[in-house]
Length: 424
Ligand code: ADP
Ligand code: ASP
Ligand code: MG
Image (cartoon, rainbow, N blue to C red; front, side, top):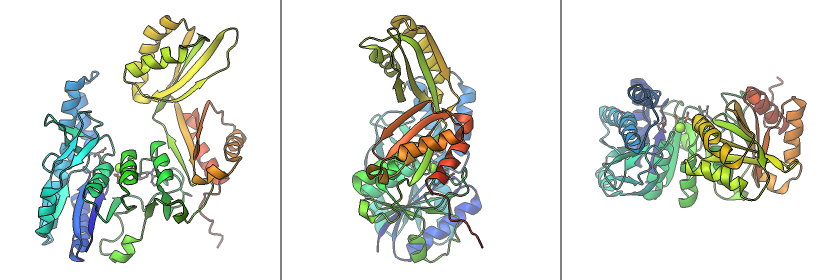
């Protein structure tokens, strides 16, 4: 008998029929003798709908008090899901009980809309499991030290599931979603993308942080920190598929480098359309300039990603960086109204229509020329690279958003990631 955590995403929970199918699948695992904890998301579209309502009521910039209420609102989507899933399990003749994050409790800090889990009290859950019940816990949320409800950032149910698995030392955390595993790139953008049987934890971490939303990055961080065995698989296989087959399907996240079966130089391609670029033009090239620009941006709580400073001409230089697209207007106002006059820059230019495309692979550590293959491929497609950033296992470029799909497809081909053609 094992302790297993299942997580079901929004599409997997998207209708009463889908929820009944999830219940049948979970009941199958429970009847096979496993202790089951299930962490569902809100039904698909529900979190967007709830946040849309909030925006209709209060469209302005939100302060901390308003962010608290956003979490109060957004958390309800998952509350409905857990109740529905518990009902569906009971209808299957399987004892089940549902809890919200605050009932468990899942304790977090107070960073509303992006709270971090600090601890999980598993006493209540263990008692229910011992009594033979399936325990269903809301994804995406917890409670802060003041007793306020918090949420964990979009896609946060993945993190809830892995955190529960870590806290309870579960034997495995299975992330059920609407694709059958982690692919070389988003299969909805590149149909030739291939499913990976395994992906190393380090690569998964990079893929998630660079924009592959198949897993929320914090869930991967948790899995790494607590060594939670974790697999991504489909909730759209027939629910009554044999457990042995199901348990080996999808993509396993591995922690040992040498466990990796597919030793490609580049394992995957990630992309992110959520960024915007700013260039501060004609900055006097003297010590302290980067600090004056980026310090002001950081003080306004705006996160910066890629940074490039050009060589100087005639004592002046250009300084570019990217921020989240949601912060575009705020950053633009800050640069134009405060930073430019303070540092004597000549002009600010902003471009919200950019994207970041990244190649990721552990094999890059030991291969030279990988980045240059990337640059050559993009140049052959006539795509101009605006910024470049590299680390040991990834190279990212910032390009015009309109070339994103073209770039991803070309790179996918160039690094031999396309699925083998059926020449039949
Ligand atoms: P869930 O609601 O189950 O959490 P998400 O929409 O958050 O599902 O994540 C699954 C989606 O992630 C897929 O539908 C797919 O379009 C997208 N995705 C992006 N990159 C990848 C990738 N490398 N492999 C698989 N799916 C990916
Ligand atoms: N329902 C939340 C969201 O849409 C959390 C999740 O689905 O993981 O972001
Ligand atoms: Mg998700």
